[in-house]
Length: 281
Ligand SMILES: C[S@@+](CC[C@H](N)C(=O)[O-])C[C@H]1O[C@@H](n2cnc3c(N)ncnc32)[C@H](O)[C@@H]1O
Image (cartoon, rainbow, N blue to C red; front, side, top):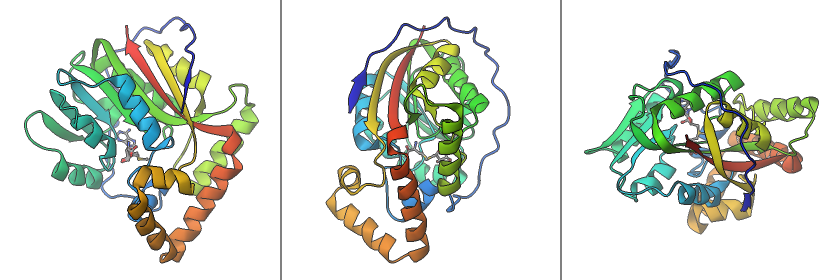
């Protein structure tokens, strides 16, 4: 994992407090989508930089027992488990998918613990009401104007000085041509069956700063989601064996997963995982 130097921010845009209203939840898990297919095979860590980058992000967020914490798109709740182990004063997960939310509610409940079904762009939380917000592997899959809405929502609900952490896919280098970007986005979307629209490091930074954040730290890790070493790191030896068995005994899933790995390998030099922590001024 690499820590990168943070450049001076460009002038922040004025923030709008009223979130847009288009928060239709998905009722069922769409097993066509790469991340749910992998989850069905037993994979728990479904973010580009693996557990290592998640731990780096958690470290930079430095969650304490005094924090009111919000997670956008907790999915299967892997990072929620890490965050809740810090015993934050409150934890709210905002998850679009009803089936995922129902699973999360079985694990996450009690005083100060809540899972809201809805779109991160339009949470029902009060403005300036929380200390830290984070979301992983959820902005990349949004169109750029939706990414901006979600970032704006994080800004709105954070108290001044609050931190927002993201963990996403970055295109490299920053100078990649528009044609190159379109090609990677097209091939990724075609194999993972999600409208993946990763940005370069400079574009992620500009988008956060455009919504008023000041970027404080940037960590990167190679995009090795489907490589054996990363899977063992993320899932442990025995779960890896179980995942391998599941993949071998499900030929259709195997074909899809091998196609995903092929695209990840093809664009290995053009993609990395990125985690950014930014502060509300
Ligand atoms: C690739 S998974 C990542 C889940 C989790 N953050 C992780 O890293 O394991 C994507 C998840 O994001 C959720 N999601 C996508 N867009 C969302 C949005 N706008 N608001 C809330 N949840 C969203 C999906 O329902 C799904 O559970």
